[in-house]
Each structure stands twice: as C-alpha cells, then as structure tokens.
Image (cartoon, rainbow, N blue to C red):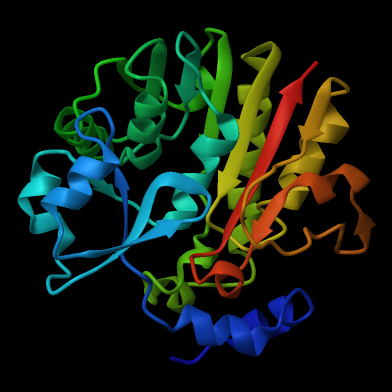
Length: 299
C-alpha cells in the first residue's frame, strides 16, 4: 500500500510518519465491550473461558480478546447481546461524556449504535437517549443493535441533527468524518484520500457542533469526537466553537491512556491555548485506531 505524497507531507509535521504508517498497516487487536445490561464481566469470562481477555485500560467493560475463532460476530454470546464488538478507541467518547441515570442525552449521529448501547448500559437503561441518524439503512442497523443489546431507554429519530430543537443535559456528537484514523480497519480510506476532502467535511462539522451547542442546556456537557487525524476536522472545529460562543468551555479529559499533543497551530493560525485539553491519539500511541475527543461545557 502506497501513501500519497501529499498525505505524507501533510502529516509528517504532526507525528512520526514512519511509525504511523507501520501501525496503520498492522491488524487491529480484536476488542469487545461487555454489555452489562445482559451479563456481568465475570459471567461472560466464564462462558468464554477458552478466550484470553486483556483489559482495555480506559474502559472497565472493554477487553482485547484472543482465541481460536476470530469471527466474534458469529458467536452465540454476540447474538444474545452479551457483548458488542467495538474498537477500543471508540469506547472513549461515552466514558468522557459520562451519562448518568436520569440524564436526557442526544446521540446526534448514532448508527450503528456502539456508543448508544454503551451509554444505555452506563445509565442502567434509565433516563432517555435520543439516538438520531439520517438514512434508513443506518437506522435499521442501529435498531437491530439496540434490540440485540436489550436497550429500552432509547428513542430513535431519523432527521438531520440540525433539525432537532429540544434541549439536552448531555450530547454526544461523534461527527461524520474522513476516517483517516481508521486506515488499519479499511485501506480504502487512504485510497480515496485527497487534500481537499476536508473543506466540505469541516463545514458540516462546524454546523453540527454549533447546533448541538445551541440545544445543550446550561451547565450541560457535550463531547465532540471523530476517528480522523486531521486538524481541520478536530482542533479547528473546536476552536471555531470557542470563538463563536463565549460560554463554551473545554474541560480536561482524565483517562488512563497514552496521548499526543493536540495541534495548537494550523495553517499559520494560532488556536486557543485551551485546545491542549483535547485528547488526540495516533494509532501508534496505544495500538488502536486514531481518535480525537473534546469535552465541552456550556456555562
């Protein structure tokens, strides 16, 4: 697999590009999240005692698993909803948002439901999650996963997130993005990459983050995340929000995870010093996909 020259030029200044390429071309470790709505961690380990479970450091229900069978989606325990096959970095945004019993939560771009089901388990199926997406096939996938996992506190909506007007205590905006942090899951990502793809994406992301902040209640929390490594989709989007709203505040993210420094200067523009509170991880940091997470408070 050859990486395009402009891609290498762009990211060489942000990370060790050789290490990035090495890890991007490695297979991901299989990881699952135990669905505690249906089974305890102890009980699942007992049922799957022929598998080796290695703890995901930042998620107590998350495990890297290794065994004879790698088709984890075909196991009975998966079909029964005892676990969700979820990339370990994808477990981070719900943990940072930390929804509680009784919260009213929006999952703005929810399908296929990994984070929705994770939040439902954290809330013990109490409170309300509005899980939204825009396409029929995505809603079907989301609905199937919610049913399989025994989730009962979710209301499904099919609309553009910008059309939602009710207020929420907490919002998860796992925004549509270029997916450049997930090359190791799909090499197609690097094949379709081009240096101009961010313009349209960043515009949509800025619109989404602005609207979600508008419908966030005072003293509410929003988590913005992407599986992109691009500053245009990450630090620049969050910086845009901070410039637009005086009552938007970034909060520290305390997790047991290795992280890299967020980008504080992009295209010659100095970004807010608070951007350093965001979480940026490259694939080589923790042997995961690349991910970006920002925790935002509304004063």
